[in-house]
Image 1 (tube, rainbow, N blue to C red):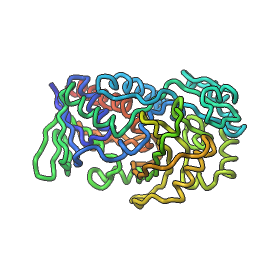
Image 2 (tube, rainbow, N blue to C red; image 1 turned 90 degrees about the horizontal axis):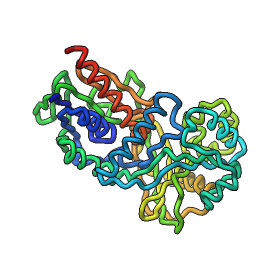
Image 3 (cartoon, rainbow, N blue to C red; image 1 turned 180 degrees about the vertical axis):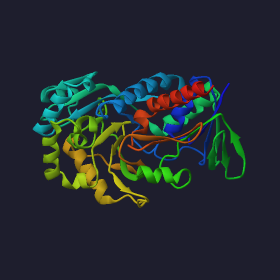
Image 4 (spheres, rainbow, N blue to C red; image 1 turned 60 degrees about the vertical axis):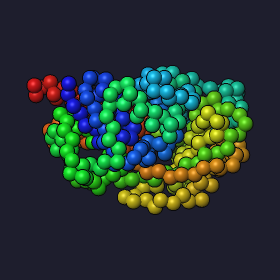
Length: 373
């Protein structure tokens, strides 16, 4: 049996632990915190397939959604919502929907008229109709990540060492801050936006910075969303839409009509939890060390985007910020030493794509191991 050490117990690290365990490897996961507390729990828990960048990223998202569905039951993770509804507020959005439906990415999707959109979600304003998907899903991140961790330990024998900071990585082992060394035939390092501790030169070369987001939880409105909801703003951000030639018109109009929202990197996502509360966001602010504060003007702009789609927002019951590693492209996978991989998702899509990415990375380690044998 081969040993693998995974550094980082966020969703990227957990995905690699699962992929390795499924191949029969003995897995140890090391994390400096006592529990997951970063980007992996400070998000929507929305496993977004529809709208992901065409090609490899979209494929990884589809595979990741399938794995989420595979592990959710055994791990005791509730799938809160299925699918996605992207509502069209402007006529130009309808052109993007029509073009999207002509691509392979439309598998599992339906183009709805304005009237059909109202039947699906009476609360949503969709004068240009909507795009409805059945392939996406949502979990409650702050519950799903701990449950996935516990299940990996119980069902796959994964060993977790929390509260241990890794200060060095080399072929065959990692070194902890207390001087202890943990051996492994392979090492996968998944440090997220911690660009200063391990392999800072690779982070610098890749141009990785941090992205700060703001999010809100709203009181239960007394009705249920049929699925997560997005709007026109997402067509300027999600490359599966934005890269289509037909998206030029909606992006141009948004630059004129939604300059404030675009300036703060806002695109509306609204999802619903089991207790009826709504998680709404989010914004995007970039820098090596963004300030840790939640700014009221940005929260207000998020709520205005919500109001434009779903009406008057309920009271805010919770606010938070989060950060994640950000750079051009979906992710980086580097080999800083033999048998070592540095894996960083740089697109804010860890929940959506990590399982598929991890299968590729662990598969490459397996192939290299066979080649060297």
